[in-house]
Image 1 (tube, rainbow, N blue to C red):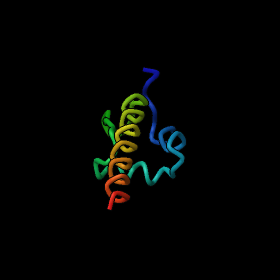
Image 2: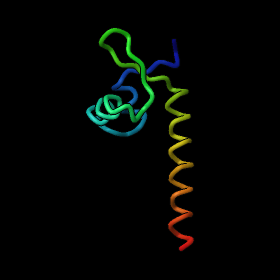
Image 3: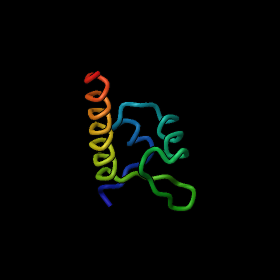
Image 4: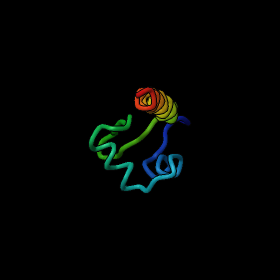
Amino acid sequence: MQDQMTAQQTADYLGVCLDTVYRMARKKEIPHYKIRRRVYFSKTAIDDWIKKQEQVNYKNETKVSSF
């Protein structure tokens, strides 16, 4: 599966440290799946998640600046 990324690949892709990726996965803040004890991330799901984060942040910024 080419869409599949390891935690390290995901950390590199997002520009964060590996511990951050694991912490976010543990708190269910980032889309992931497990196969036994290994954690994997779908690049497509990560890209969609990033887009959603951008939309949420944009909406929050426009609400704050309108006051």
